[in-house]
Image (cartoon, rainbow, N blue to C red; front, side):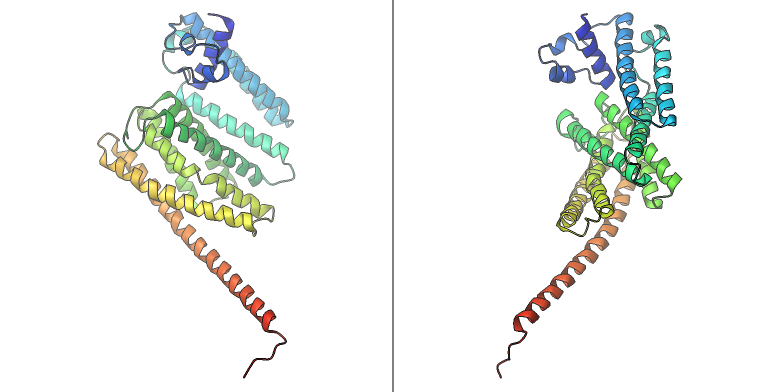
Length: 346
């Protein structure tokens, strides 16, 4: 195998996609058949070389992140991570011979995801020193919301399988990667919320149910389609929620931009999490394939969404009444200005 092809395959192995999507996107001149890890029958040495190159690429990225972070603990953490990977790289070919399907064990993938979110949070804390810790955590949440929405939308609408017609189907490689990515984030955010006591019991329950649902799907090797659909429905409104918080912090919430953000947040939450969520829950309960505890988790998540919906309806009612009173006040002031100084006809 030529060296460029080896790096392409290593990238695909690291990213968990062996269909040639990334190689066809970044290297259109290379045929995807020549770099497909499943079509190329690698020897143990070649598989180990691909894995080592993947580790090298990840180590380079972590080292670059460590150089950007000037704080001592963050640098030591990055250096320790790189050291761990190079020790693993020198572990021998016995591990390469035992790796047939997934090159990373699921706990290691989740640990990598958790470390990535922690590193991103540390960089945001260093970048925005004049802000509080919640500002950096909200930026991490915003990043995960955008990333999880895009990836879960690609899985549901393009890659498949369709969650409404194939609940309980076996997990695909991309689904597993997205679930590990989100599981690492939820673990990070749950620990942050508990440590800083920033959220109430409802949000903590939402995070716990999400963690248990994702863990169950990864352990069973099935039902990732509907779990990814739940992640899509949960995270599609997250960027708007974070934008609302940032507008409040910057003093720009009481403006036309704030009204637009609130309007789309209420519409998306009602249409996706309540409307489409009810359809997904019906398909999940009607199908005999998913396990009963996966169905129970879906019902709990939908119930949590309804509790949030009640709070959102109260908020929308208060804001609508406030806007209506402000409009009536302005209307009466305009009428008073028009009639001021003129005698009424008797």
